Length: 142
Image (cartoon, rainbow, N blue to C red; front, side, top):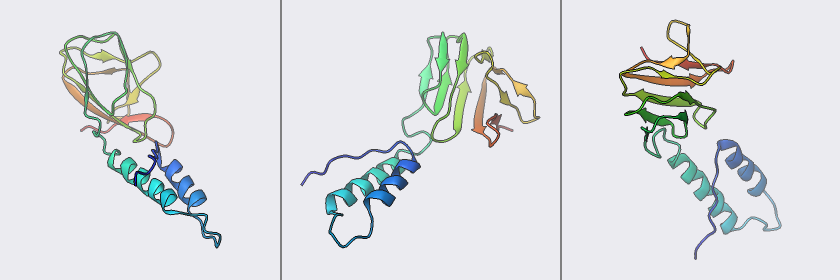
């Protein structure tokens, strides 16, 4: 028997289905299909939650880049700017393989290991950014 596919984009959705679909009752409202969908969706989400599950993306055409893969390699052409938003990991890895710095989009910055704001990714550098509780992004590289 083929079961419908259930997908989740975050843990909150999984927890919501567990708490709302898998409940104690005497009416037999919970069947194997519901439980199978929730468990398969949860396992798929966990499997795909590895930082580099979708493999690193190579950006080499220049222009304005918005990070879409958790791990991104910039090479060949200097982009005019780079930016990012939130992702499920609250973490980004950017590998700059260029001999020039990559500028960040106006207003975007991260805090370096010395507590200084940075508005570019230095040449030939890998940065690992973590979002902190105050909303700032901090580079963890030493």
